[in-house]
Image (tube, rainbow, N blue to C red; front, side, top):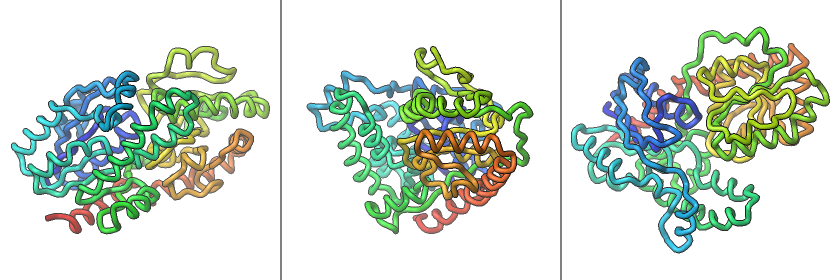
Length: 397
């Protein structure tokens, strides 16, 4: 099988949920003996980075084109008088289109994987040049994420500025996804949504799969540590961590002032690191995500805007870590609160659950053990491989 993987951000190193999902899919296909070629838009947040010793990097021979995809207020204002979809058009680049076209000319591909909604802008061009199966690997329902962001936006100016682009994004996503041979949803929740708009015969559940570590060991000094790991230039993470610091953390410290909250994340705004509450320690960008997750006794993932599935939560489950998140954060993960995860949506509830869990070794051990069992059952990389094989049997031309 010859596979072309088209990405809207460079997936090396896999240091956030989106890049890790892309990386792990490439790894799953390579381990099946398929040949994978990766083409990406490189951005300021995700520049082209060489990883010559990484086996997935070496095998996929990634190429990229640098594009400035950062949203511009001026462009959003211009969008008010245009039918063009500014949110998507940031990823429409002639040089990247030419790179895709040249690659398709050089090699005949059996499968083209489009990683995320923003790459759909190239589907018509690829369709003309490729007879293989065109798969949209949907990381989330993109317009739903933007609609939630719009709903939670405090600024009247920003809300009105984003209304038209978000509406256009919805129209684009529901229209363009119908052009693919198959849409692979990363969660059963998203699959149910796509079923109603695209049809049962064109949607599959293509789960995120992770190579589960053989053994995990929590740090000896993790007893009083709570950890958070996430990109701090992503709006849902910013909203969630600010809510946690302002609403939840004071309640936690009232119950147990020995607990510490360690925050790991890249691209934090300078003001974020100033005047952090007592007991909160900012670690900055984390090189080894697994070691950081295991440096605490519990991982907090406060989220109120989400679609798809939260890859960092799955990483935590796979490591046998106790994860405390919101209903929205747990969306798409078949987990039971109190058994293999902790779900809490109010400040009092989350503070109480965290303090009581941190206090009880029996409870943390039980949840950690069931978290690992859940990850082995639902998110092992072999599940992804099985789904890919079934998809090829059904849709190969």
